[in-house]
Image: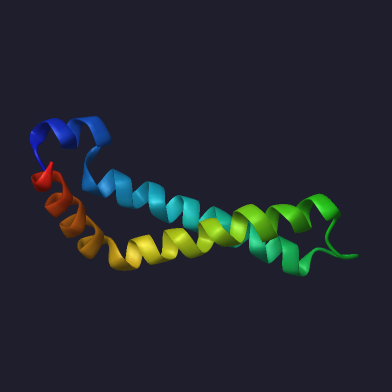
Length: 80
């Protein structure tokens, strides 16, 4: 990562912290969906189904595969 890129994105640690925060917030919403008394509302059900679960899955895979994603992005940048 160049110095310019690091300043623009906030550096690797800040990016990882933001990813973890988004992942944890989605997990909290999922727990609320499962354990809310009286069953979830239609709005919460739609949010979990169409926003929260995809964000949770995507952020988890991104954190898991980040080194491979970064190498792929560098390779794509060199081709342009």
